[in-house]
Length: 76
Image (cartoon, rainbow, N blue to C red):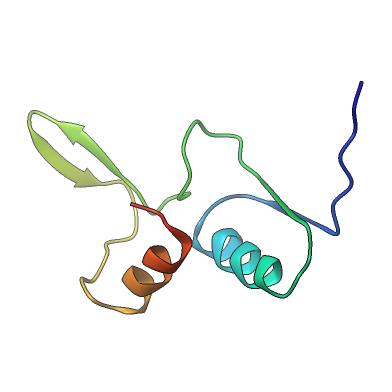
């Protein structure tokens, strides 16, 4: 079995985990983000029902700092 060694392990891929992971990785730390769900974003996501996209938690403000951060991270 092959093991990977990381400098930092972040539990959860919500906005906090993704933000911390992005910044730490850019600082040169080998960073691992783990998530128990089958998607990233934590409570900050949407589901599609009947052709509508519904927020499951936080609501995104277009062109705000979160949008810019997600673009920097390459998240759609």
